Every structure is written in C-alpha cells, then in structure tokens.
Length: 291
Image 1: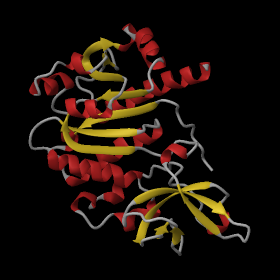
Image 2: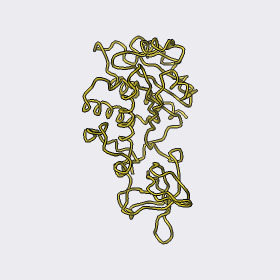
Image 3: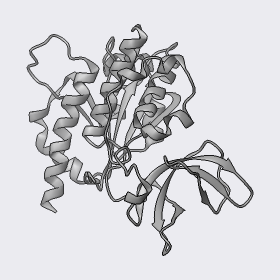
Image 4: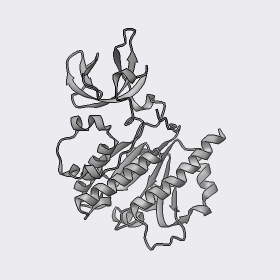
C-alpha cells in the first residue's frame, strides 16, 4: 500500500471564496479539482475557505462541496452526496489516489489494524452500522450520528471476521487527506479561528523569497501549525485586507513573493498554490531529515 509520510507539523492553506467566481460550472469544477490535487500532492492538512468580498457565500459553498467530494473515497460518495448542481461536472475531477482512496477492495485482502473511511448508515441506542465499502454493513458498539463520516480501524478476529474500532485521522500513521473548513468568515476571523503559530501571506508585492529564506527556515523550524494565505484572481491579499480594514502585515508573519521576476504579468491562484506548496514542501522535508 502506498504510504506517504505524515508530517509532524500541520500545514494549512487559506483560499478565497471568489476563487471560482464568474466561471461556468465546468470551469469551477476543474479549478477546484486543481486545488484538491495540489493539497493532496503536497500533503496539506487543512483547506480554509474565507469570504473575501460580500456576496460570494454561495461560491464558498460550491468550492467547499467540490473539495470535500474530491477528498471522499469513491466507495462512499453515493452514500454522502446527493445529486447537486455543485457536482454536475464531478466526472471532470481528477482522482487523488491518496491512501484513504487506495485501500483494499476485497475483505480477504484486509490486513490487521488497517485504517479505512466509513459512513454511518444506521444508528441505534447501543450500536451503529457502518458502510466501509463492502457488500455488508459492519457494527460499531456505540451510538453515532447517521450520515456521519468516520475513520475506523479494522481488527481481524481469530475466526477471520472483521471488527471495527472507531478511530480518527490523528491515529493514522501516514498522510490520510485534508480537511475543509468553511464557516462563512472573513480572512481575519478565519486566521483567528485556525490559530496557527506561523502565517505566511503570498503576494507579488511581497519580499522576494530568497531575501528572507533564512528567516523563513528558522520560523518553520520553530512552528508546529503553519498557514499559507492566497489571494483571489481579481484581487490580491493587500486589496482584500483593505476591504476589511486590516493591514496584511498585522495578520501574517511574512509577506512573500514566491515567484520573483515572474515572466507572466499575473499568476493565477491555482498556479500560485502549486508553486508555493512545492517550495514549502521542500523546506519542510529538508528540516525533517535534519532531525
């Protein structure tokens, strides 16, 4: 089984709800899929969607739905998601192929203490029945909310049967996917809620990354929860913060130009996400190897 390393540090990204504004539903889906792929490739733990202007709340719902759908294992999607306008073009979404998606397809292939995602189908006073992608439902001896998505640990009994134990992503010993957070909050409130000890803003008006590389490396080494902020296609972070009457420097520790001397006049948000995460993935990997 593919087992990407799980970071000791938590890495989150914050993107604006207007990221998919004024696009055809097909293009909304494709762009959101690119963000999902970037998050999975670079082992992002959290994707935060913030309100960057008034009137984009619906775009945030659309974006969060697609991102959650991408992260949901294929065998659970029909259980969790109903027919929706948001998912009309879901067939265009790229597969993530993260470990939670590439689990065993047969009960006989299950290894002892293997993790798996499931959804609660029936809930009783003392027992809940869970769909984990096989033909039958499996019981968990506790009351859970119907429709709830859960992480379970599979235990092989002496007679060969499977027993489910309620678990969490925190217990999984490899990268298991990202969480999506959308609370209809502006960028300031989102940062406050996430409570990262290192916040990095990306902007073409920021300091070139090579100018602050050593300071950035030291800050990463001393941080456990990192959040990277991205602006919108129509407006950068400086403009967004101005709308909410806050200085970008007051809500972030670094304002960095990730692609100094860029060859294109503008860099799209999804391109910035790939570029930025590529660099920070390298820096975090180098730090992990020094330990």
